[in-house]
Image 1 (cartoon, rainbow, N blue to C red):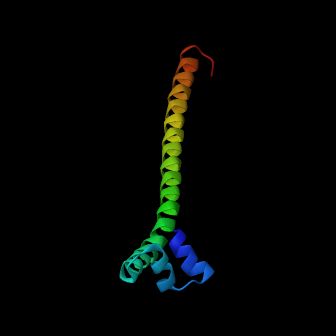
Image 2: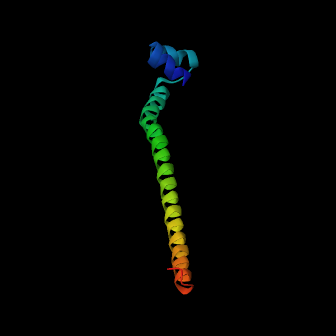
Length: 89
């Protein structure tokens, strides 16, 4: 990253940076190509991962709410049945 930074941000030439670090300019070019190809994916992966986690959490919470509603409905049904049996309604 330090090498890319010096080239991209500071503006040093590829040949100067490669000479200093004893790198073949072709290797630098391959690294740079890979960096730019995968750089965007790194940002997408993080946001995609965050979205996926949020969707999973929402789904889990929705299932919990559904289960809670089912339990409440069963309890209310039992409550109404007991009231009817004992003349409460």
